[in-house]
Every structure is written in structure tokens, then in C-alpha cells.
Image 1 (cartoon, rainbow, N blue to C red):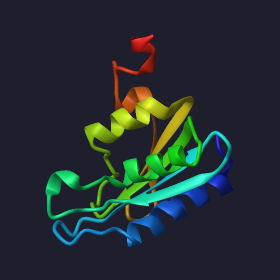
Image 2: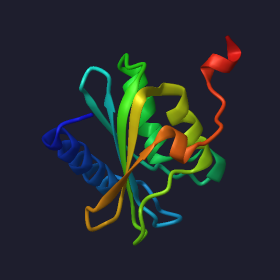
Image 3: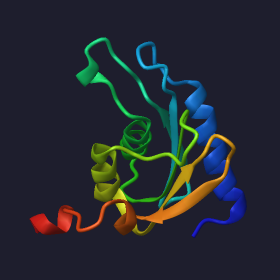
Image 4: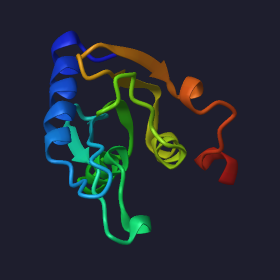
Length: 135
């Protein structure tokens, strides 16, 4: 598990990424930050497109950036939205998290006030399908 300072860095990175969101259609900003197995932090925001299907979620933007930099396992992901409740990743993002989640993966689902809950991969995607089902 990450130490408190590292967890706060991850949270701060998610909030900073949220400020960069490109959301001209929904006005719903999402920010995410991922901690990889090497202790590196990668952030991402949601990016909308006039062709709605071409949009990308913040969580996947952050994870794909980490993977592009060589990460293969993510230990923690923090996500923040404009909603007043704890952030809830979509189903596609949960499946992408599952693909790269380390065994001790933790999701920090944030509220705008900075409070959060910690959830395991099994809690956010129970009875999931992953790479080991293809072996």
C-alpha cells in the first residue's frame, strides 16, 4: 500500500488533471491519476469529441499513458468527477483497470471535497474476466 504522502500526490494529480478536461459537450469534468508498480504517477482527464464514440474517459487516459511509458501493473488509481458523490468509473474503465491491476490494486473514489473511499478490484468488478481466462 502506498504511504500517505504518495496517496496525497496521487489525489492532487487527479484534481490537477480534472482541470485539464476537454468537455465542451457535457461540461462534466473527470480527472484520474494512476500509480504504477515502479512508483510513477500518470494522470489523465476525460476528452470529449463531436463524434461521441471517439471520447475517452480520464481513467483510461491515465492508464494508457502509463502503459505507453512501459507500465504493466497499476497499484492505485484516484478518480474525481464533478458529481457531489464518490466517483464511479464506467464499466469499460473498470475492465481496463482489471487488465492492468496489480494483486493489491486500490481505487480511490474521490468526492470534490477530497474525501474518498478505497475499493479493491473485486469490489468494483466482481466475478470479472481477465487475462488469466485466456491462458
